View 1 (tube, rainbow, N blue to C red):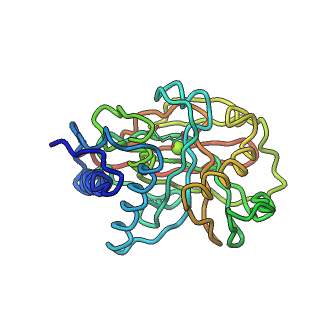
View 2 (view 1 turned 180 degrees about the vertical axis):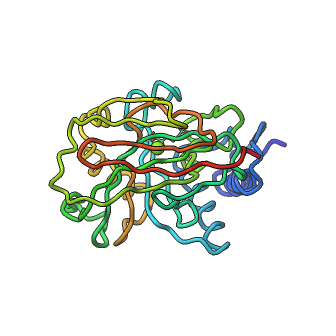
View 3 (view 1 turned 120 degrees about the vertical axis):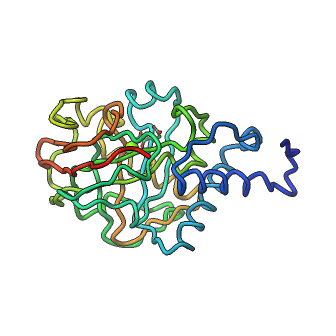
Length: 266
Ligand code: OOG
Ligand code: MG
C-alpha cells in the first residue's frame, strides 16, 4: 500500500505506530512497512509518542528515558550517526538479580549502560535547565534492545519511531553522584562469557555529557523529564546477542547489575 505524503493528513504516522506496536506486542518482526518511507524525524517522534500512548492505554506508565547512539561503537554497529531518545515504561523494568523471560522478544540484544536518577521534575524547554543538578543517583544498568524490524535493519526515523528498540532494562544499586564516571571500565557478560568491554569515556567523552543533549532532544520532541525517572545514557560498547543464562554488566565504582535470562526467543 502506498500513501501520499500529504502533510495535512499524515495518516501514515498512525499506520507506522500501529504496525510497530503490534510487532512488539506479538513479538513478530516487520519485514515490509511501506508507510515508513514517508516519515521524517519529527514524524518519527510523533509515531514514538503514539506507541507510548498505546502502551499507557494498556496500563503501563512512563518510568524514564533512554539515549541511543551516544558512542562510536553503537553508531558503527548500527550505521547511524545521530543521537536519539526513546521512552521507558514500568513494564520494561527487570529487577536487579531478577529473571527475564525471553519469550515475547524477537531477537533481543543487551548492552551495558549507566543510569541517572532524576530527583525532581525538570522543564526541558527552560533555557536555564541544568539537568545534572537534578540528578541524585547513578547506577550500572543493562538495557535490552529488540528492534521490531527484521535483521535490526533500520533508518534513523525508523528506529526513532520504534521507540529506539527499547525492550527492557535493569538498574543496579544507586550510588551518590560523587562517583567518578568520566573514564572507568565497563563490561558485559552473558552466560559467563565476556562479550564486550570498554570505557565509559566512549559515551560522548564522559556519560555526563549526555545530559545537556537529552535536554535539547526532550525539548524538541516533547519528552517529559519527571521526578523519579531513570535516564539511560546509551551503550558504551556494541550490543551483544541475548541468550539464556546470567547477564551481568559491571562498571568500576558502581558495581554490577544482573538478571537471569530464561526460556527461548519466541
Ligand atoms: C537502537 C538503540 C540504541 C544505545 O544504547 O545506543 C541504544 C538500536 O541499536 O537498535 O539503545
Ligand atoms: Mg541502549
